[in-house]
Image (tube, rainbow, N blue to C red; front, side, top):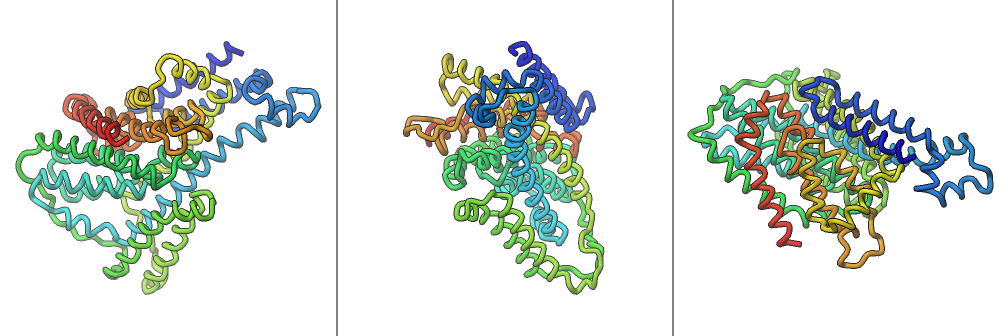
Amino acid sequence: MIVMTFIIVAVLLVGYLMMSTEQVNHINRAAVAMFCGVIVWILYMIHGGDFLRLMNPEEYDAFLGGRLSTPETVKEFVADNIIVKYISEACSVILFLIATNTIVEVMNNNGVFDSLVRWLRMRSSKRFLWVISILTFFISANVDNLTTVVLMISIMGQVVRSHYQRVIYACAIMIAANLGGSFTVIGDMTSLMLWVRGVITPSVFAAGLFLPAFSTLCIFNLLVSSMLVGKVEVSSILSRYDGDDSYLSVWQKILILVIGLAGLWSIPTLHLVTKLPPFLGALCVLALIWVVEGICNLERNGNILFVQRHYLRNTEFIGMRIILYFIGISLGVGVLKECGFLDFIANWLESNVDNVYIYGVLTGLISSVVDNVPFVMIGMNLFPFDMQGGAASEFVLNGAYWQLLSFCCAIGGSLLFVGSLAGQSVLQLERIRIIWYVRHIMWRVFVAWAGGMLVFWLTH
C-alpha cells in the first residue's frame, strides 16, 4: 500500500510538471489533468480496501452493515461515497463559473463595456497604468480573474499601440486581476472553492484581504511605473459595428450593467439566507439578465443577438478547457487525500513548522512554478477545518490560514506566468517573453508580495 501511494504521488507530480510546462511541451494541460486524474483512481482501486480501512473505517463498516468486505463492496462504496463528493464539489464551482462567464458575455455582446475604450483614451502613461490596474482589480472582484484578464486586455489593445507599453500594461492587468479575485469569494476559482467548502464567509473574507491585496497592487504599480516614460501611444479610433444598425440606448446598457453587478453581489446574500449552493444564485442572475437583454433587443426583429467577437471566441475555448482541467485536478487531489498522503504531510508540517505564515509563503512559492489551482485544492485538504477550535486556532471559520492560502496563491502564482491560468492567457495574448518577465517584473512582484504580507500581519 505504501508503494502504491508513492506511485500515485509520482504520477501526479509528473502530471503537474507537464501541465506547468505546457508552453514548452505543447501538450494540452486539460488532457494531462484528465488522464492523470483517471489513472490515479485506477491505481487507488488496486488497494482500495486497504485505503478505506486506513482513511474511512467507520463509514465503510456502516456501509457494509455486517457484510464481509469484497472487491465489489469496495468498488461500490468508492463510487457512491468517495469519488462523488469530489465531483460534486468540482461541479458546483464549474456551474458557478459557467453562469458568471455567460453574464459577462451578455454584457459584452450588448456593448456595455464599449464606453470603457473611449474613457481610457488618455495620454499619461503612468496615469493609464493606475486607471487600468485599479479598474481591473475591482472588475476581477466581481468576475473570475481569467475572464477579466481576457476582457481587459481586449479593451487595452484597442487603446494602446506601442508593443512595449502593451506588455507592461498586460502584466499589470494580470497582477491586478489575480489580486482582485483573491479577496472576494466570487472573484477567483480558488476563493470560490474555499467558499463552497464552507471554511470562509464572504463578508469577513473580503474585509480581511482587501487591504493586503490593494496594498500589494499599489506597491507593484509604484515599482513598475518607473518603466513607463512619456505618453501613451494611442491607437486610432475605430468604429464598432455590432451586426445591426441599431444600438442599445445608454440607459439600456446601464440597466444590464447594474443587473449584472448587483446580481453577482447578491449571490452571497442569497446563499446566506437560503443555504442553497452558490451556483443556483449565479444561474438565477444569469436567467434574469438574459430576460432583460431579450426585452431590450426586441426591436431587432429576430436578428442574431449574440455577436461572436474575438473576445468571446477566446473565452469559450478557454472555458471548456478550464472545465476539463478542473475536473481532472479535483480527481487527482481527491486521491491524495483518500490514500492518506496529505494527512502524512500535514502531520509533518505541524510537527516541524507549525506556522501558517510559512505555510502561505511556501504554497505561494510552489504556485509560482506549478499552477495555483491544484495547490489551493491541496491546501484545502491538507489541514482539516477546525469546527470546535478557539480564537487562537488558525483553521477555524475565516481563520488566517484560509485567507493566506487565497492571497499567497494569487500573488505567488503571479511570480511566473505558469503559476496561474490568467498569467498563461496573458503570455499567449501578448506574446511576452518569459526571460523578459523574469528580469523586469518578477522581482517587483516579489517586493509587492512582501509588502502585502506585512500589511496582512499588521491587520491580523
